[in-house]
Amino acid sequence: LVELVQLEGTQSGLHGAKITGGGSGGTVCVLGAAGQQAEEAFARVLNAYQRETGRQPYVVQGSSQGALEFGYAVLRPVR
Image (cartoon, rainbow, N blue to C red):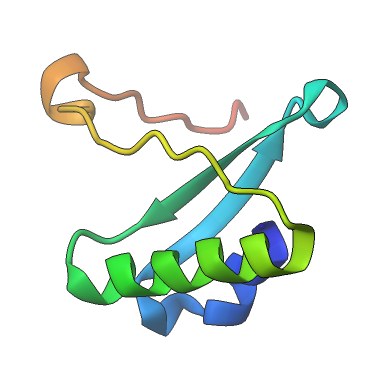
């Protein structure tokens, strides 16, 4: 999935993907822009994955208030 997202390129509205927990079946987080272009690119990724593996991906989709709700930290190197 990570490679399929990379093949779409950032111009598709998909900014990247990261796999975690691969030894237990794994989860892939895909970061993308809101909008139809990214949704269509994501659908292409899912279709390609299913064609290549024969497996239907399970998708949990959404967003949160993120930094607006929880704030953020600026990290600066210690000198």
